[in-house]
Amino acid sequence: SKVPSITLNNGVEMPQLGFGVWQVPDDEAAKAVATAIESGYRSIDTAAIYENETGTGKAVAGSGVAREELFITTKLWNSEQGYDATLRAFDASLDKLGLDYVDLYLIHWPVPAKDAYVDTFRAFEKIYEEGRAKAIGVSNFQPEHLKRLLGETSVVPAVNQIELHPQLAQAESRALHAQHSIATEAWSPLGQGRGLLEVPTVVAIARKHDRTPAQVVLRWHIQLGNVVIPKSVTPSRIQENIDVFGFELDADDLAALAALDEGKRLGPNPAEFNLGA
Ligand code: NAD
Picture 1 (cartoon, rainbow, N blue to C red):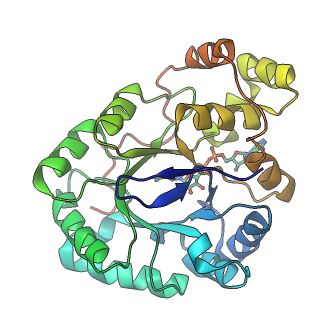
Picture 2: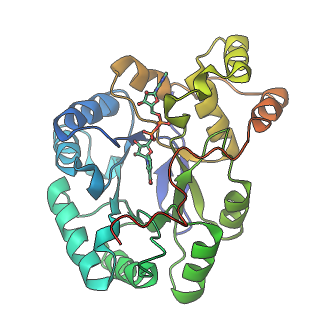
């Protein structure tokens, strides 16, 4: 079944489920992205720091799918924040991807110690005005970072991509995003396959629906309205992870999954993550 799209706050359509390529080496990324596109994925999430924009671009070029049917996201790395450095880094990313525009460009982390995300976003606004990114947004912005950005720049970010899964449900961020029509995109949506997929509640709901734990977790995100970008390099799992549009979790399932929220972070706390500052 086909992946539905959500409409971003600037009218751009974004597939609600895409394919993430963090930690996938460039050559392998080319293969994995090709498999994902063959399996029906149309949205790909990469980043300059993943060092696989080249492989991603090769897979896109060789896919036989029209560019306008694909949704390509990349991200600006921390060390390149600042107005001029951002413009240069964006050119380098486009070059590696072999594209003349991306669908979504994100500031990867706020990097509070650098205090440059406002200027960085002003460069994003220029890129957006030029049509070289169809939408611009942020990643790992906590409410305080987002509120400052909203107060000091003119384009409202289309997306905030944050760590989010049933054990870190991010209620405060989701509510703030909803207030400003910012789409919530979940990174590590499966909890990196570390433990979450073995939690008895998840396993029991999977049995009940004759689905896998990964499918139950992805379905939870979809029903919450999140954009998700699960990662796998295993073809059978790549297919399994997109096959989540033919069943529905009921109110009991959603309540049981809501009870798993324990504020469990797998990644760094964005307020303290200053790598590349
Ligand atoms: P994920 O939650 O998608 O988990 C991926 C892991 O789960 C796989 O490596 C595999 O071990 C396991 N898995 C995948 N499918 C499975 C299945 N069907 N059954 C059982 N196990 C399965 O974790 P992720 O890769 O960290 O996150 C997804 C994407 O989010 C990344 O690839 C990247 O694009 C993005 N991301 C962004 C940031 C950021 O700072 N913006 C940080 C981390 C990840």
